[in-house]
Length: 284
Image (cartoon, rainbow, N blue to C red):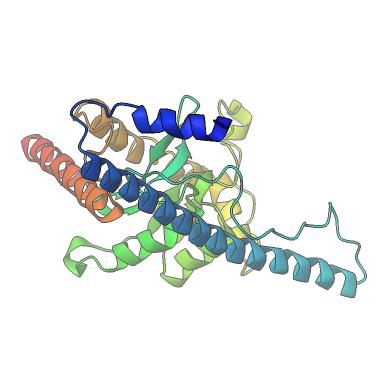
């Protein structure tokens, strides 16, 4: 008897695990293979979307460098590398909730997450806009927030200023605020704490003569009134997130899928507004 025949005979004589439902086991494995194939298709689609975005950014950088050459200036820094298409070794898809994404979390490390956004009124600390996104970067989230704020009833008043940390800063975002008659206060870099007495009470520099929204915003943030206005951010939106997580106990979402998680976040912020309105009523 050959070795191959011996192995085949041994396989034929192997006992079936007691209680095993062979059709159900085959169906389970086929479903698992289909889930893996679907995950592969999702990974390839994400990779293509990322490649198109990176390609657009690459072409924009190349055009900027070429414009500098045409103006007789030498481009600074290294030339950008063209993006590579296709999935990467680090790409992953969650089989439990395919719409969630791996994101860095405070305290270090990474978790399967969504990115919850909220706009908070500085006078009442009421949440006036929310949305949920799969993007880790906040730079693309200011435009959706402005759209939602613009859709609010006129009876609620008019938004005059928008305060956000450095994660939201970009020239496009500053321009988007200006187009909606909203004065942006987007931190360009990390705040300098503990200013000296001379710097804190120094007279403001004259306003720059320019239409550039970033230059105007940078100057506004250096003025005494601008610093006082931006300081409201930490005592407005950050406590809302902290109380929702620590006091109300929403430290993770129970639902799966972007739409359902967005609904859960809306309910959480509505609950916060009810609590806050109760406090405001008692303070009257």
